[in-house]
Each structure stands twice: as structure tokens, then as C-alpha cells.
Image (cartoon, rainbow, N blue to C red; front, side, top):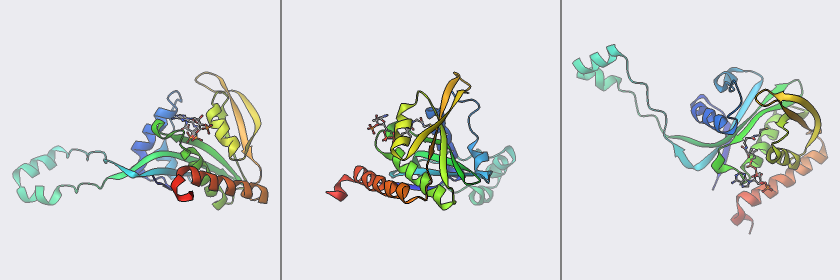
Length: 211
Ligand SMILES: CC(C)(COP(=O)(O)OP(=O)(O)OC[C@H]1O[C@@H](n2cnc3c(N)ncnc32)[C@H](O)[C@@H]1OP(=O)(O)O)[C@@H](O)C(=O)NCCC(=O)NCCS
């Protein structure tokens, strides 16, 4: 099983919106990922399952004039039938940051349910940290629901510490947000820990390669 990480594109929006709705059903309004693609502060990545593909959304049906011309003029139909788009990468999950001065703020990280509990969250988080390093961030930070212990455990493992609390931050149920942040991501200690995590994740995702 292999997963690849690459930047979000507009072809991914249907899948990413579906993953967002599955992961954060109560968040209102839902994030506008199409707008995020235009946002200069925002940087999003996706993890694709290289063993699967997704059928592209069906092309929009042609308008009335186009339909009429196709019926009356066979050559018009032949030369104006849109090509069948190629199958798309199957997205297991995605994450994103906003770069604000030297802070990389994780806006979202989410996996399809069927891909949780296999280490792919770690893969995305490492790729997000690498993305932030490439953009010269000094540290990463995020907010997480007080009840979301699965996500908090993941962040702790990858070098995030609890650094604050926002009371009643989530509007749907007035739940508190825990703020978690890394130390300096360019420090030798952080990089050494990151390298260890990379290696143990690689053993988890590709067990046969290390035996
Ligand atoms: C948070 C999230 C990205 C973590 O990614 P992940 O790849 O599932 O993380 P891990 O593989 O490290 O598994 C985390 C824990 O999930 C649990 N888990 C195991 N199998 C699971 C499964 N099939 N389904 C769900 N959780 C499972 C385990 O307790 C595991 O902890 P462990 O390390 O002790 O085994 C993912 O769970 C997710 O998308 N959650 C919904 C969105 C969300 O809450 N995002 C964070 C917002 S701040």
C-alpha cells in the first residue's frame, strides 16, 4: 500500500469537501476550500491512496442550443463532444496551514473514516511540518476540541504541547479549544525527534520493507 502527498488542486475539491463533511459534520459554515486555493496564506496538501482511483464527476449536460445543434448537425456533435476525463487520485485525507508571519497554523487535518487508525494521520502531519519548514515557519500551532483525544494524542506524539485554552471556542456546542504548539521546528532536538517519527512511521506503513 502506498500513499503519496501532493498539493491540493481544484480537481480534488469534490472529494475534500466530502471528507470535511464526514469529519466535521457540525461545523457551520463549512470551510470554503475553493476559496482557500486562492488564499495566499493558505497551503493545503492531500494524501492519495495510490492503489485506488476515483471516477471524475460527470460532465455538465450541454445547454439547449448545443443540444439542438448536435441533433441537427452530426459534424457539430462529433467535434464538440467533450473528451472523457481521466480517473482521479483517490484522496485518503488532507491537511492545511495558514502562514502568518513565522507561525504555521494548522487549519484542518482529516482522513476518510476507512483510512483512520493506520498511521496516515502521522504521514499527513509530517508532510505538514515539512511544508511549514519549507515556508520558513518557526513553529506550528493549532486548536483542537477538548473532547478530541485521538487528535490530541497524535499531535503530542509529533511534538505539539498544550499551550493554552480558548473557552467555548466551538460554536456548535460551546466546547473548549485546546491550543497546541510545537517548539522551534528548526531546533536540532525537534528535527531529531521528527526523523525518529519518520522512521517508525515508515516501518508501520511498509512493514515488509524493514524486515
Ligand atoms: C485525527 C486523525 C487525523 C488521526 O489520524 P489517524 O491516521 O487515524 O491517526 P493514527 O493512525 O495515529 O491513529 C490514532 C488513533 O486512532 C485509533 N484508531 C485505531 N483504529 C481506528 C479506526 N479504524 N478508526 C478510527 N480510529 C482508530 C487508535 O486509538 C489510534 O491510536 P494508537 O496510536 O494508540 O493506535 C483522524 O482520526 C481523523 O481524521 N479524525 C477526524 C478529524 C479530526 O478530528 N481532525 C483533527 C481536528 S483538530
